[in-house]
Image (tube, rainbow, N blue to C red; front, side, top):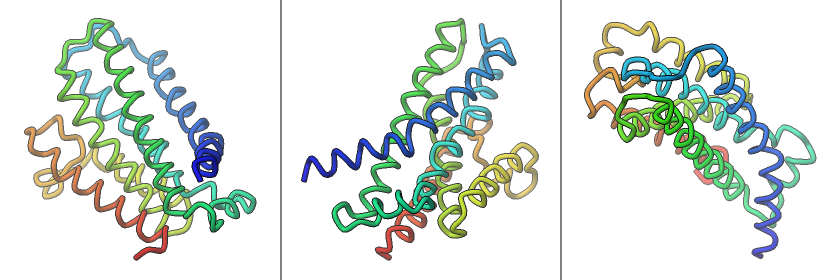
Length: 206
């Protein structure tokens, strides 16, 4: 049994994880070429860490259900040997840990280059936003059956947040560093809700 699950883990590294990590790394490298990341203060770090890095959650998590669209991969996913709920949970854990690791390295690098911001606070708030957007993309992909709809929904909400005013801006916004520390909790709750919707429905265990 361990050999079977190990094989499934290895296959999903190839079909899901590697390409998405490369995309996130390219995004961050492009940012490094586009702007000077040295000596960033708290205001600039907010733009880089939460407003920019959070888009990587959309890239990493929205595609959790995408590989099944290929027939040969779909047969593997829905085989009776490895339950499909395990496959999807495995991918989510892979993607989540990868995002945590990349954020840790990237934020520490900013501090190493002279950044002056609260690492713990920025790390926690940025990951909350990242997982919210990624889970929103997952839910959109699941409910529509199309990964592009998931991208459209998540990126649409992401862009909308830059211009949000009125009720939404007062009571719920994903860029929590511009508000008090407690604003992180609704974002985390939203991420969990979207995860449950996409995971339970996709795995047919509702």
